[in-house]
Image (cartoon, rainbow, N blue to C red; front, top):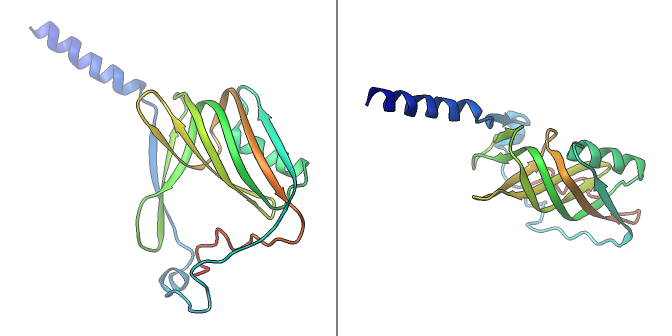
Length: 182
């Protein structure tokens, strides 16, 4: 019986040691004044921006490429200023993302990272705003779907394909992800 208990304890400890996922909560304060301000009646509840695509770019990333760094590099090389990430598919051998973790300002995010966990890329969306990539992705493993805001440290496994609709000049996306524009 003592031997069985020792084996079970070692099994639990060994399994825990292999678990590599980390979670870190970070407060994303702008300033006390900005975070505590009320909504402005000058800012509409919904804003519509109209534009046309000048081109569609399909990006393919190979095994072991960092997904976010690769996107940032190609956005710069392709001179993409403003765009919509229309789709993404493939698989990863590790992931890093963050999700919002509270409901009042200042906002807080939980950063999730697992350098040993493979997953399929189920979907990807987001924007390129003045040359800056703001990408979200949904991934899945055998048990669940999960995801959030893409971070460095998400490495490609088999491949990753990301389709980007590039806007023609003239559209201003600078406020679409500005949490202070309220």
